[in-house]
Image 1: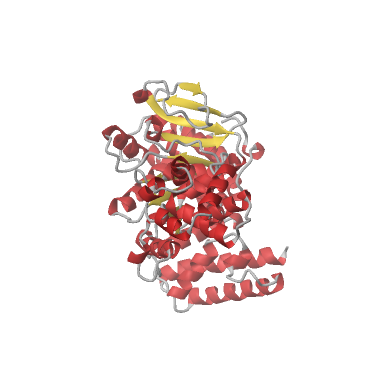
Image 2: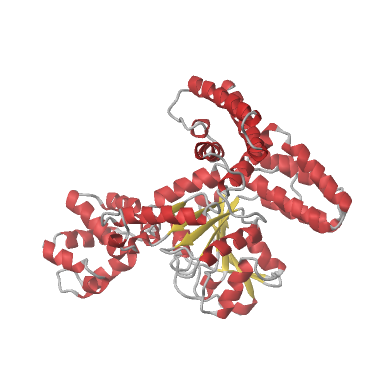
Length: 507
């Protein structure tokens, strides 16, 4: 890497400080370790890289399309669904096929703007795909779509295991996923034991860190397929049932994820990628005008929806079903019943609202984007520590250790201590009373002072006073009544509140 740290664009001051540390140490290390530090520097300067993982047919690629806002990731069974695909920003739209030996071949997108189903090359020689898109979403976020777990295809299983770090990788394939600093893990109605194992293995293979509330979110996809009457407390409401199941899955996956959010990937993709058109809106208007008995019959099942005799052509209904499924059609018809003159654009927004995508993107912002500086810096420090440990040189290990310890004494590096404390408390490694554990999660769960203090509605003067009050309380707790492990966490929280107080005072 030729770009000097001071000339590079970083996620924030902490990433910049880690970059300077890496650059300074490279000249003091062996060639092999220095080369590894160069790779860490490259990743530090890149956008935050989020990998999307999960079981086969869980709807990962559909969600990738919704996140990007373009139907570019293949969702049908084919070669490309069995490959790691990295979606990143580029000035020219193109797909690069990367081979195991490092060769690259550029291929065009298909006429619909997606990755072609047939690559036109020997599939067994392909490592992964690099898709470059002139897409604003990807300016600060690289999305990595991974093969599904549980494929019946043994070759796909091998590739998935490789992507998850459970087999030895060739360097090119390893580099395709190793840069991921955060993970979106997609589940459907049931979390299985191997989901938990795969989530841990995946993150360990990417950023060399365990998944935790700092760098992982799980999505309960296909929420519309849940039988609401089988979920206690749902009152036959599908979305309420999905929220109840998501909360239960969140308990199962803690502390590996920050949250489990329900989402309907198909509706999200349709509403975000131009899949819902004005003719679709008109077709729904025609359905809304049918008599109530016919409408109810159509909505009983997918078969009846496409085969029952009515004034709306069967082909039109099949198209709607493919884009929206029955739940989406029902939501659209409810909106039309409440507001018959609703525009096509507003109807699309209602469909998007019904998908749950807004909550997912909001959580992406609060968990990943807002903390990209800390996430990237923590991943980089984990990587350089691992490089130093594997070098076998005691002097190198000591140099890296001393440099990191020096970095961690700086005020801007305290967020790393906070994220570490959050992970320890969430994992139960340090037991805290429930109210204090919640406060640790609150302080580490955001970069906004109001949210960190749990009172975003307060004016600045009152927030300043509250920050100092909590700083003093946690300092007292660390000295009186806390166990040694709790005291270490309390010192970190005290320091966090003190820095928030300083930040608010100087605004």
